[in-house]
Length: 255
Image (cartoon, rainbow, N blue to C red; front, side):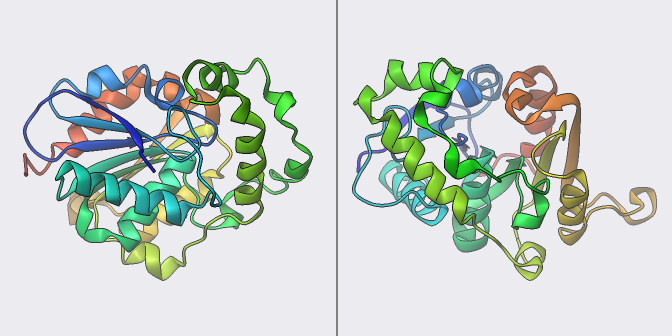
């Protein structure tokens, strides 16, 4: 499979990989923030199997496959390690990279991530199997797909495959989160699909929620965006860009 990707910027140090959300692509997930992130670094924005300009293949959509595809792309590009920013499904892929391909990851920015199903609001996915492709016609995601996909008629297949993924979401144990080596920034909307208590729990597992004036700042960070929903996180570029940029450059440039 030939994974579509775009490269922006040419700064030194670790590249930053951007991984989009479900049914989304580079434009709807990162269109507003990408120029800011690419000012001082090389940014590699990908589109996963069946999304955007990357064609579908005869296999299910899984976070495990997506993460392996990103690693293969890094190999093709000659990138040893990269920072990763993922939103929604892309954050789950980024987390999988951190837990199962740790040697390829520098720092992680995870926007709207849940490491188990209890992290989502109760009942959130009830009725998801009743979702039909036409229910999303006219949405920004569908319009982007029609503009970019190699086969615009593949929308129905994409929605059907995503419903299968949603029926069995990826999960990590608390021990796996605690063992995550990459410095991690958790981003959440205050009206997100992930419960804020879950984000704080994950933050604590990573070593956060300490009295920093006494102990020093931990390697992890937590940002909760006010007046923001799950799907409007990509519109908060003015807030996120400086926070992400400062977090990624904290330890200085690294090849």
